Length: 240
Image (tube, rainbow, N blue to C red; front, side, top):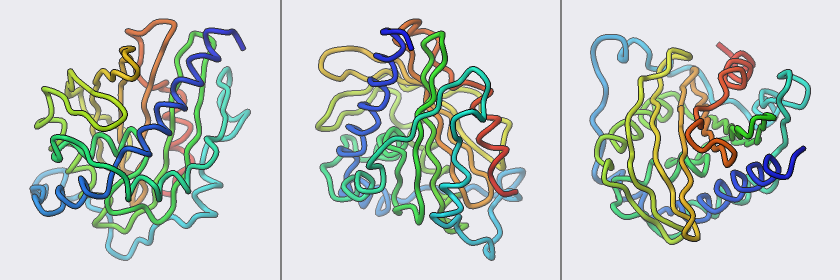
């Protein structure tokens, strides 16, 4: 692995871990109190996960996560300590404005309510693109509501937000993903330790499982869309 690529992998993993530590329960509670408009009618209403569909269990989720050798030309590494970090996320400091908390949660591969199961891997390609992949198992209604909250936050937080780790700006909605049952895509720029870092996110709901993909690239910073081959391979492993 080249020095630049190794630096990109480390930076992406560090960002994810730092965001986990800063995505606080206080902000999540504020978001719950504020409430988010339920999506009804048309395609979105028909895509709500069936109430009888249980969350993906911890063992099943670990099995569903991408592994080394499953995507040609892509290195896959687990992100250690993610379960402990997720619990820290729900007792940490807040995000300002509080309405932007769902975006901080996605950067940390966590959510409010807390996922029933969770796992994260970091993938990297030779061109410098790093795609962080997080899976979260939820109850049916929660998974749908989280997607709605993220979509609402993208619309409300165009001017950016901040937490105790850094600041985020230029939140821009992107075309919705076509994969899965529903989803949302957006880009933003983070500022950590004074260094700008473009990020591109795609959040996909497949049944009761949320898959969060975000891309970073220190070699070609303008090319941060999550690797499509990584997304296809990961989503193909999820139960229908």
